Image 1 (tube, rainbow, N blue to C red):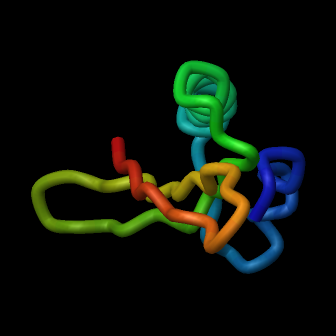
Image 2: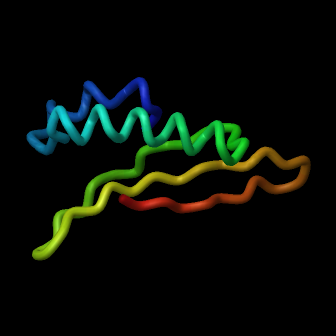
Length: 73
């Protein structure tokens, strides 16, 4: 899911809070610029007993096979 698609999460009943959505958008853009990623994609949210995790992965530009890097907050 691209960053621009974050507002469409609520149709399924699972949504991010306003704070999570705002923070995620800023953090993903910042990470994309800092690491020179061609794209960064929000994967989802894992709700756990002690903490929740927001998962994203970034694609690095490559001539052969793209490599993925995973991030969580």
